Image (cartoon, rainbow, N blue to C red):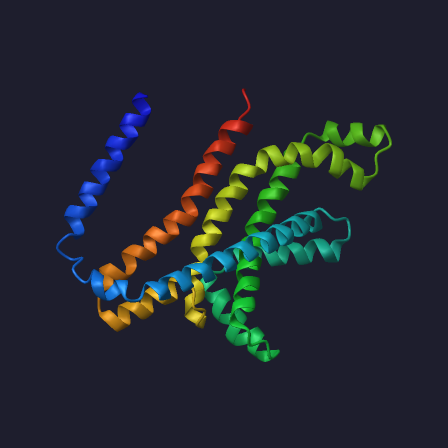
Amino acid sequence: MAKVLSGLLLLFAYSALCWLAFSQSLKNWDQVWGYRVTFLNGWATTIGISAAALVLSTIVGSLTALARRSSFLPLRYTAVAYVETVRGLPLVVLVLFGFYGIANAVGWNDRISVGIVILSLFSGAYIAEIIRAGIESVGRSQWDSARAIGLTNAQTYRFVIFPQVMRQILPPVAGQFSSLIKDSSLLYIIGIPELTFAANQINSATYSTFESFVPLGVCYLILTLPVSLWTKYLETKVRYET
């Protein structure tokens, strides 16, 4: 009960502080309210892009993590090169190069699908490292025991390794999902009509900067806070006593 009251008091104090800070600036709500459909359409686009990228980046990350452990050296080195290249470049560079360079060169002009693929490849590199670290955290005795009872490599991963790995990687993967949702805001630079693109359009039309970007922050919080809270919950569920 004390924690709930403390949380409510903190929320009230934070809300009062925000109101005092912006009450003198936020005067053009009527103009911004007229563009509410633009905000909603942008938010729906952001949700769709983020959901598709979450699924695709998980697949890419899982396959890359396995490729990095492959005994086939060309496949392993290709996976290493992909991960290190993507992690060493800012997302904005990948978005611009991926769309204006590679996509345009092959005649791929669907901005939304290009954006989903770029975002998935970017997040997939980080998920791959999370999964690889989780696999390598499993003790060598587990692998030896699985081989001793006659399990194949695929069966070892399925029945022995992955059940242990999932408990370790769920919290950081959930955190990466939250980052992916926020990273989707950079797709506005290639003209995708997502949430940030909508806020910029409204700001240009109304010259109401605060009023345009405050709803932007609120909408992203609505998307990312549940993921963050889920991450905290997972951390308590999978924590081991040492």
